[in-house]
Image 1 (cartoon, chains in turn green, brown):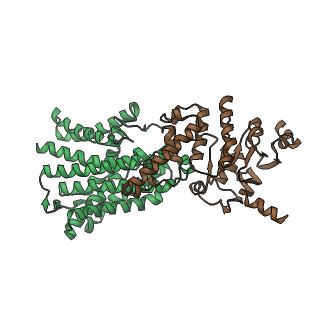
Image 2: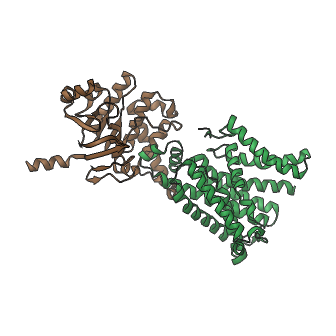
Image 3: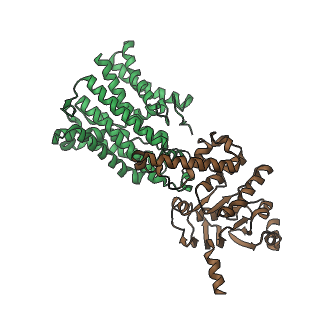
Length: 290
Length: 260
């Protein structure tokens, strides 16, 4: 039972990550491979706040989101001016920088040893300590993220995002400030990713830089693409499939050492297969093959 | 005499002065000047590569020019970004016909409106009702425009499903929706069937009544003759001839250039 709850909690965390990345990749057509960096910023922000200042969980959550959002804007403003492929490289660079800081600024982030003993969330006097408690909290935050991104993409703001995805010049010729919209959506994506980081850090109670590498970013992108970019449910579906699928491998009876490697091959294989035969993912509206 | 000059100036919507543009040694605009009056339809024609589309791109801020001036309703245009220029009230179509083909016809029109409250994040979350109300108003206005142009029955279809002619029509409807006072139409009737040509030309003809001014580029001289109040013939980035459409067509310099 605990095992099942653990899987569900992971699905929740990765749903938040993929829903937020989908705002960028699926709706606006900007591919970022820095999502795990913002996920990490959220996790480290909440861990440092809780460990250093013992500030309450909700305050930490909000501050982590703001910090990540502001960082998103700082990264987005210069890098979103550059065109597609170069933008991807810029986000990759940012991802590497964040990882290096987490890994090397030992006095601040604990370096490779990470930050242990992150306290459990206490909300209005209630300590969230059980798996069920965490699952409830994560479902609430998942629903919030889903609602938030739904509200955005169904609004006239979201219509401009889709227009930018298809034809920036057209959007611009009707007075839309394309760079401004991109920075705003990048900021939102970064802020929402921090929510997942906060939940991961407080759930596991220990974080180290290896959870926030470029491999993790690519995993989140795979979830979005396989689930279906540019649809609201796609990322959730993708998270269910990609988080649960490798767990099934355990039941085939593969030894753990082999299973871990097969996982990576499975993700890679799935991604290639989807790109070839179903670029829209399971339920997506937006093909990644153009 | 000065008084009448003043009067003319006051009615001038766009004034382009001595524009120059070079693309790696190829002259696209060579000291080009022209004006457009309030409620005027100006037809612009000339051979391929004459610099007609370049002129549109410079006016709308999509490319920068090397030197010259462009003034729209008393404000200078050059050095502004294309989205700002659009917001000032100049709307354009593209020669390679741009539309969001994956979005519905109605969504394309609704995208074109300027200053939508729902395009601000703050309103999306905090003032949803205001934004919804505006959206509803724009939807009705859009449907009315689609009705007027005869493609209302296609409102909920993806724009890509429309015929080529209907797509050109839709791109003009989008310009109307933006509320612009000056429309720059790049080959609005090229490559479409005669029935649709009549439809689009009659819509262009009615634009001055709606308080719009128009510059339109066409290869089709008949189209220029039918709707424009004034015509300019361009070649190699220069203005070769200007005046009443009839006069320009019969200008020996124009005939010579077209025969070459």
